[in-house]
Length: 172
Image (cartoon, rainbow, N blue to C red):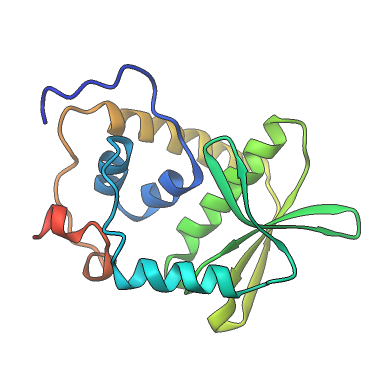
């Protein structure tokens, strides 16, 4: 793989931002079009929870390289919701949602976000601010560097490895 060359800057969508906060190796794999194991139980469960939750809201709204889980209008405020099966990776989910809000802001749309953990009956509101925007800009820079690297980042065991849909690429 050392001969791999990206001809353009990687397209950064919400999923890559989420992976960045979980594992940089996943970022490297995804930017090369290497998909996680679609038969992975955790991925399947996540898709089911997404599909079965918050049915009254508009699901799977596409904007560029981003797909919002749900979009709603709450008393004139555009709200983007990100559904996760657990709060175990809450910081990564928060930054994924912040990325969506930032993308909307760049298009002239103001929105707020809701992190939604239906199995835990937990909801957290997110409003984009300068500190979060600065963190995103730094993450984008790092993501580009990771994507352009000829080799994947070194293996690093984390608490997420056991249930990772990419585990065969690292520990298989």
